[in-house]
Image (cartoon, rainbow, N blue to C red; front, side):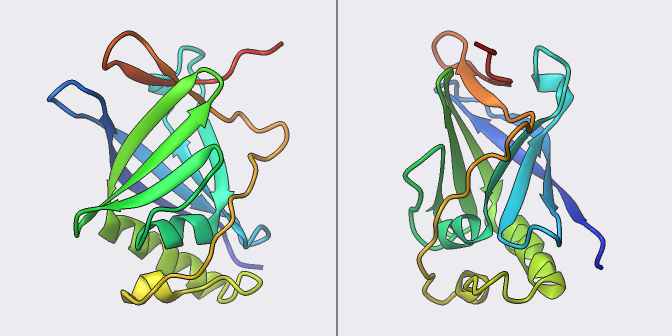
Length: 164
């Protein structure tokens, strides 16, 4: 069995404020879950002081590097030639985070080296070709998934959703 893959990247939280807030983000892949990738936000941006993890389909991230995709809680689209935007939706609000496309492609290449097919996942976005269809995976049950929360005009923070 292969080891999990983790890559640290920088994300820029997008708000209507002209200055971006740069945050460290971990991209994770577990070989025993080849269809999913995880985007993990640091504990420092959560009021609870815990990591916030989103689980999404690997193909959603890959396809979003080439064209807008996603209709559920996570949406991904290219932003110019070198950036990609990932938008996270929850009942508490929306968070928009911009990444360097090259960092996301590098991470995806590493995941395909460990799990080449991922049950048929396309690899075209990694080669600058046309991307295939993608579906969004749900957040894993019981996972500490974050909920973006807007805190006043232009202020976006990631927090864990409240419990009913």
